[in-house]
Image (cartoon, rainbow, N blue to C red):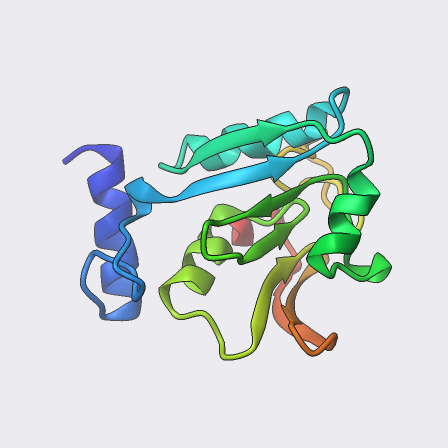
Length: 160
């Protein structure tokens, strides 16, 4: 069994679902449009984290990334260095571990805009610095402008 098939099986077992997402798309079909500054290396690390787990990424370098975030409805307190958007319009802001994006995509909560990890916590995907780790929350951001904690990550091993 190859890595992508193992990932599909893991998602199916974890959620008791078939190997396709509720919107008729398999993990192999997910393309993320990633908006980042041209010089940001940690964003490249996060993109590699996602691509290694079966996602594809189209990378864009807008002249005003904050304007892109404004257009998408991202409040300043939700922001990080990069923004990924699926073709369905779900937004993944910052250094979110792939497993939480997969959980979200299997069953997107009603009224959800996406997920966000505000700031740039040390030890998150793309932000690895030796064995250092800063606990962080993954926020479920909602179209109505509210948010709640989707997951709390208090150790590096909970990211994978």
